Length: 235
View 1 (spheres, rainbow, N blue to C red):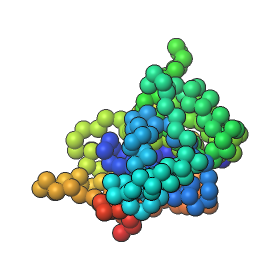
View 2: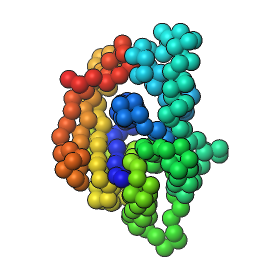
View 3: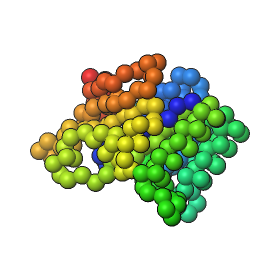
View 4: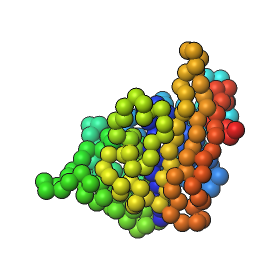
């Protein structure tokens, strides 16, 4: 019955990290998870990650039998929402999410990213009012449908000097509602992408906000993406 937010500069690994975290929850608690993916195709991208996480083996090293067994597990526990015309709206997302919850028992709903949802602002509605209305609607949906809703959103465009620092929740276009309305807020940041042409794999997960004590407390986690296993590990 909660609403969470994930942000970070483009290319910082938001989708990858929270794909892993949601996988851990789905597998540990035997849940059904619904992903509305607007920038990353479920096949092959999301399926590749899930195959790797489930088998603890990079997809390229899996046999056809291993892939088939992993896909069976994925098909039983994951739903993927893809708008047929690539123009999803909040209303469409909520309609599909309700079907996922009622018919298929989904307990986790993720929209990735928010910025690709077609805006349906009223004629006399400011962007701040629109964002506030949307977030309140999502929060009410999570409460009414007894599920967790997560939104991944890019921050507003920043100059080159600010891109080197992690954004805040308020840096997402649409005012302080992103910080005020959500129950949990996370930021994913990579201090360096490359060093003399060599790929850097260190990342930091900031837990910026927790409305309730049982959801944790503001803190940060130092992580590294392990290229050999295709998963983040704690430092």
